Length: 493
Image (cartoon, rainbow, N blue to C red; front, side, top):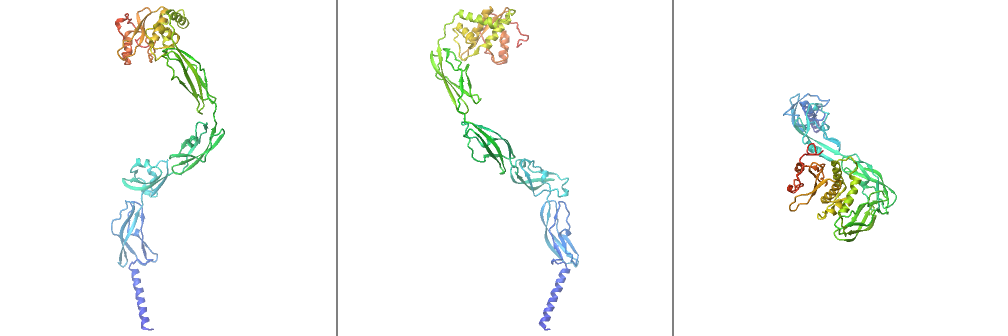
């Protein structure tokens, strides 16, 4: 063997011996030991052995020392150095990583519309979660989230940790179908007209599945597509009942009207409108050409329309005529007819009963008018109240006087003391045997009845409703009034 070959064998032997020495001194050669990165629960006390795995063929024992503090109270990865010492005292230092598990899950998926509770974020795989206090860092904000992914702060025993909230919507909307009736004039309906009671955790858009022709007289099946914010869809089958209405409404009772100059004709009395569809059409009365203060004839127009746009127009004439002169005899005759037919209905009625019947008849049978009556014509006012049964307080007062005179009950006209800009008001003083008391047949709009009332009772009424001016009058101009109340407490019965 040559010297060169002997030298090669010698070098190879030295290499093998050195390698064996490395193994016996704890070197990191392949199958001897391996440094690992452990994953541990919070609160775990780490030891050096947690960072090493030895091979089954290891011929030496190793002592592993952690060179610095290794806390495990904060979740996540942490760096630390460890020193491995073999049985021959050979040392080697490694930089290692260990990871502390979180009490929280990395992420939580929740169907939107369901409650987002902190319990859903707890990592129950860690036994020590029991007894910990978990709470949202910002619960109001969490409650306001819509669909999406959010970083959620959660306090674990007061220490802030984070997880991910994935709010998703995988549930399609639901709704109930609605049948829609369509006429030629209602126009094209909207898709949302065909559904009701839409239920979904997010807003829902309604669209037609296809184009539909509603300009027909047959039923049209439709399909409505409901789409929520997450793109979930549902189809609702509904129906359109289509009909073209060409029949106009009918106006009944139109006639020519005669009215006295200065009065308000009752244009709508006796007028009715019908339609073949069963609906109640809208009636309009055009009286813009009528001047009730000037004698003459005027055209008025009645028009009625249904919801399909069909319209009927009817014309009539209003004759404004001069009011005939009325005599006292005319008033007495008409008052006697009303007294015998509606007031004196029983032979045993007292004066109180008769006076109250006149009060009620005048108050209830004569409707209000916004047009003041000519106060220089009390005879005409009484006749208008008794015959036409419409007028202001002056007309009511005059009509009541005519009926009281027919009954033989003493009465006096009384009027409000007015100042500039105030309106007039008229009522009566009536004596049924105990002195004069106030008698006002004009409705007050309240339950209070100003029938046979003392001055004090009227004053109290006006004070109660802050209308002191209403029964203000010059008390020196009228007969002395009775002061004993007909009522138990001076108020209402």
